Length: 537
Image 1 (tube, rainbow, N blue to C red):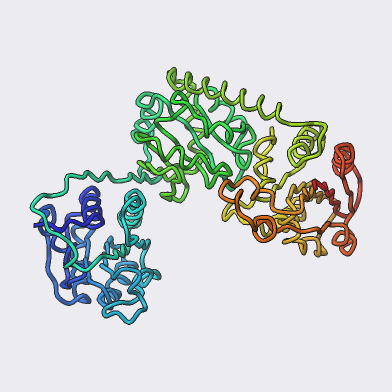
Image 2 (image 1 turned 135 degrees about the horizontal axis):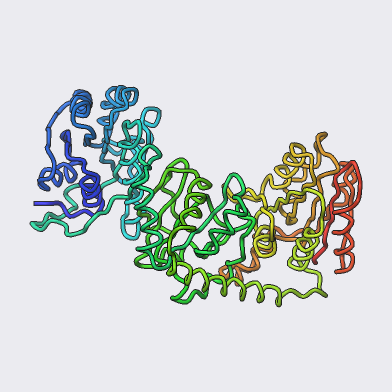
């Protein structure tokens, strides 16, 4: 008889998928469903041990000979009793997979018996810890990724203990069945540098060029700009979706995602880097039923906003891209070239649409950024461009061309954007531009109260006297307090801030004033920073 619980089924299915075959099982009621189903499954060699402290070391001994071992404990302080063995396993690099059953979240810290804060209790001495949520439902993919990443951390590289915490209902609330689950759980493959030999490389490239019909590279923010020549070569043969936060050859695609025809949908996404400014791509790609996602990441992280993660290759993105374009020169990639051509047509149409929507006779945030970016093409000095979050960086992704841009997209907050640009300008010593919205500017106004600033910092402030990004959020259009309480409406300008900090100040209220201001911003020789404030409302 098996208990019918989706989280338990998923956990055991992935243990089998990763070929974990030894299990040390401790007594208890909260973990009874896991223990029962592991034994009933018949795929595991099971060892019952009553005392958790001894069970932990018993599992360690098995691990020293057999490799990965799962140890299952009940809720409460039972988890802490395995801590001495976990610490020893950590310093021995032994792959123990500690699975703790837990009470539902609403019971924690409510004086309910056998409850404590279990998640994170072993964090100092495990390579990875995860906490499955109370309700499964649509979280199947999320739980799969969590368990897969934890098990991979235990068995990959130097190996070591990990902790999987599983909140479960009372066993009396769950039904038993004679039928085993028919679900198949597929492991997410992690390929490490030491395992990345010619055979592995050939298998990966064969999957891209021969097995995939519509392969695509998707690039989020990277810590260092990618090589333009390498990216241009990649684009000749493959569809590439990237943003100027990483790729100087990026082409705008945000407006395409919402109306993607079937012919432009990928069947394989090679995902590189961090988050993307484009939000709609996450849900759109996640909705593709048979999509496969391969992640390229130097740390081997399992992050995938598109879900469907199948493989993770632990390698540097630039090394991967170099290998890829070298292989493209010697491999027939007709299918992917045809797919790339369709995307190139879509890029061209999108660029034409964006250009046609610009009213060059009306002052707006879009016309300002468009003019700024067009003028950069004529600058003969070295320059660097920072964009603040929200509307500013979205406009940057539309109109920046031929250069990368910097933006604080790690968390995607508005605070510190100008301070970051200021620090960069002090370090680089070359012309540094910062395009920023009014809320970001005023929130970070003390960036200008800094003795380290020089004349190479130039700021374009797009002041429409509120958070303009909120105007485009559908759910806020009917919000009665949107302007007064949500979007941060104000009447401030930057003149006083600039005066008190000895910062050059230019105000622009017309299209002509904006264009003259940008030219002056780019060309004026001064020892102090300059702010061009474009008044949009």
